[in-house]
Image (cartoon, rainbow, N blue to C red; front, side, top):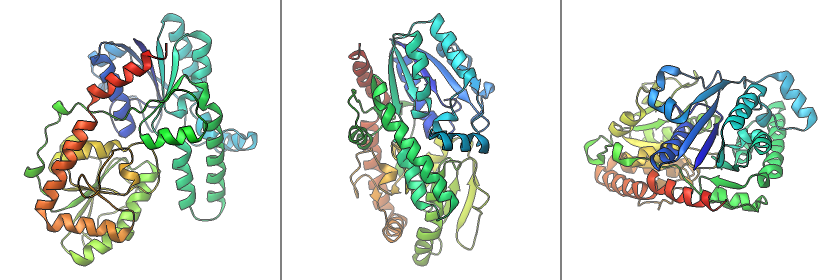
Length: 398
């Protein structure tokens, strides 16, 4: 197949879960013998870093990135609010990107165009006007659900009111445009069910994030479980919200029973509000050079997400590397885990702390959970198998 992949940020360097998921798809298609072209938006938040791209990747994908200004603009925000249009979508709608896309479509024929997230949906019309390709939405999340959760957590006042309006407009856009695509490819079964509830009548195929596990060495029995960590991009609001909850609601309960417990906070763009505090056993590391190596050598992974949908890529990475894990239900949504067998799952701070304490106190339990979780993840999320199933689905759309 000839595939065009439209991305809302550069897939490489893989700086967060979304980048990893997009790049896994590209690598999987190429390994399966398909032609893939990648066109990405780059922004101040997610810049194009040429030195991080190898020549083989550029040549095999004809990779190109277009600068788009997506930073919050008060005038644009007010204009969208008055017009009743989704500002989330409008920020990614660029004349420069449209021109580049249309030039590519005039020069080259494709069988499938994959829109990586709802934020690329505004380019569907351009694809339709110049190509006979099937247009597929790859839904990394049910986007309005994330913003609904953030709205619910916001304090009363102008911010909560504005977030509520943004969420409403995003939901309306999501519902109104869902059946414009030839298919939707969500990352989790829960999101698939939600899309059906929202009125989707088009074909749906669940295709989770996949990994090439043969390239990821891991040994859960050779690493320490004497500390706790969180690793995630800290410019994503649900991560900020979750870590705040971990620090304020969960961690004091852990320290109450284990005064030597240590919590490491790692991830790029760490907010200044999160500071190391030796009296609380909290160490802020910030961005790590190599996330895979960090995961292999570190202790108990926490995923304290309170809002969101889709699938947490860091959960797959961490568990496949043999990390015993404590998570909220949202944090491991779509992974098919069994609580107490593959990981510990808890939504309340008291239960969350209890499971952390158990793993700290019992290396044997931590080892069993780590091995079982690793085996489950490596069986369920092999990129080769996921791509094979996705290709079969895409070919049926012809």
